[in-house]
Length: 110
Image 1 (tube, rainbow, N blue to C red):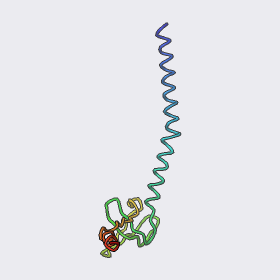
Image 2 (tube, rainbow, N blue to C red):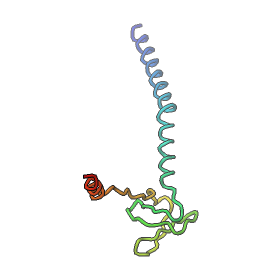
Image 3 (cartoon, rainbow, N blue to C red):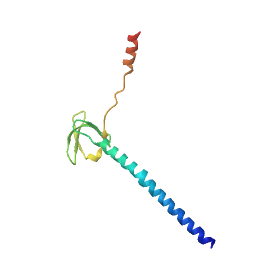
Image 4 (cartoon, rainbow, N blue to C red):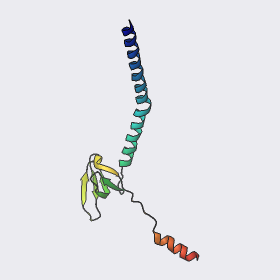
C-alpha cells in the first residue's frame, strides 16, 4: 500500500517538472534564441560599397551581390566570390582617438 502511494507522487512530480521545463523553454529559451539568430542575420547583411569580413578572416569591400554570391575586393584589388553564409559580419573598424591630439589640446590651454 505504501509503495503504491509513493509511485503516484513521484509520477506527479515528474509531470510537474516536465510542465515547468516546457514553460521555461517556450516562454524564455525559444524567444531568446530567435532574437539572437535575428541579430546574427542582421549583422551579416551587407550592401554594395560596405566592408565585410568573412568567417575565414578575409576583409574586403562588397563590389557585387547576387542571390547566391557576394564578391569582395581586397585592398590590393583582388576580387573573390563568397557564398552569403561565409560573411561573418560587417567590418567597421573602430578609430581610436590619438593621444597626440589630447596632448596638443592640453598644451594649447597652458
